[in-house]
Image (cartoon, rainbow, N blue to C red; front, side, top):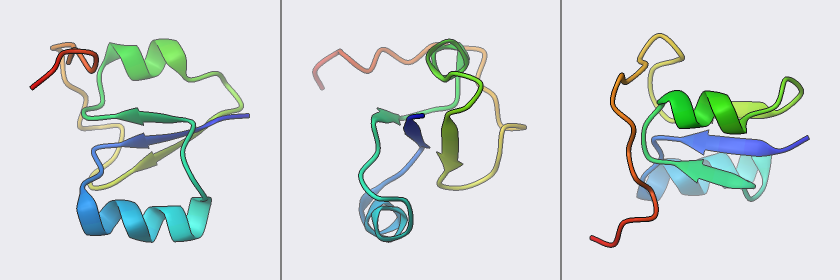
Length: 65
């Protein structure tokens, strides 16, 4: 079982780590990559909103900003 954080930033992240521990995966947005990478028994924790806030665009987490 893995823990996925979706959409977290600074203080929200710190609070989530206190509750859930360090995440196994961090996703900037909820997109089809989250769905593909999360197994049925994984925990997906949303910073704000829920799985209703699905993005049709895939964010490239590996790109340098």
